[in-house]
Length: 145
Image (tube, rainbow, N blue to C red; front, top):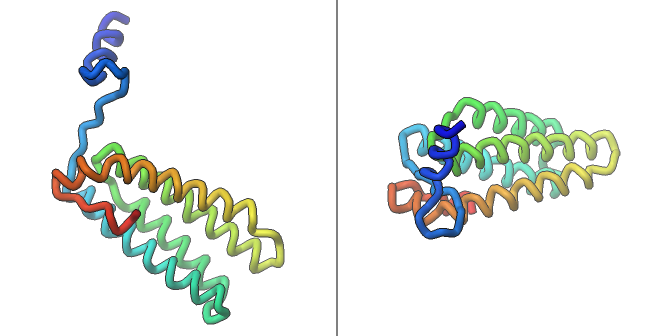
């Protein structure tokens, strides 16, 4: 028990705020995640626009969301903020896919879109906070913001 208590105090920053100090990295796996996330966000954004304009089918968007989930699952970021973001983006893609499936079957996609946007906002907040520290280490998260 005493070791746990001591270890807990060691990870606290020395500002007295009680916030946990996060040690950021910019490893090859972090850059791989960032590239995969950026590519999937861009692809889904374009395809979603096409879907809304009637130029793409629901199945195409669903396939892209499934592909994005798999793509992100195959990354392993070591940075704690990027690791959290990876999980959040995977959940966001799943919810967006559910929204498109609901729309395809003439059901209300609202609750799924709401969740997807909430998850996107959460990921944005995490990346915004981590951006300066990650940039110092060579990882630019700007394309995801």
